[in-house]
Image (cartoon, rainbow, N blue to C red; front, side, top):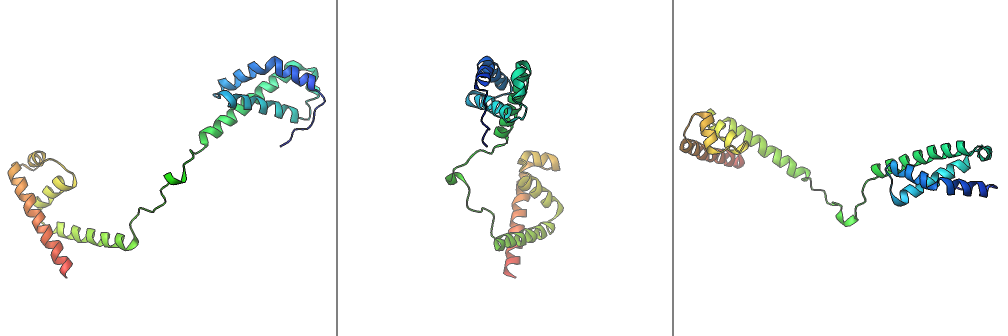
Length: 177
């Protein structure tokens, strides 16, 4: 976007000389540093010159300075917002280009196996189901499982072994049919 030519170089130069440090400080207080603060000040001057009443502001330097301060604050806030919203750039090599989700036929087979396993678990005696649920699914230690069920740790180990064997037999029988 081009800024219209101005016949008031002396006024604009004096405004920049007198207020540049203060305007950069305003941009810094809004959270910008270095070149970004300078960009906000330049944007403030650009917007000031694009105003249709900028010629009338030559006679009112205090008003022009206050207006310019407000414009620099707004420009700094806009720049800061854009930086916070910008997504970080990733190199193409870093991007995950391969879909890691299982293929549809594999997902269907996994679902069938899960249903089969749920049916086999339902066929186990209640104490065996509790042992499998605590030891395998919830990964509770043998001692804690024994305490929770009122059994000895050795008995929990035997029940888990028997439950695994029954599940293995049930799953094999279902695969064969």
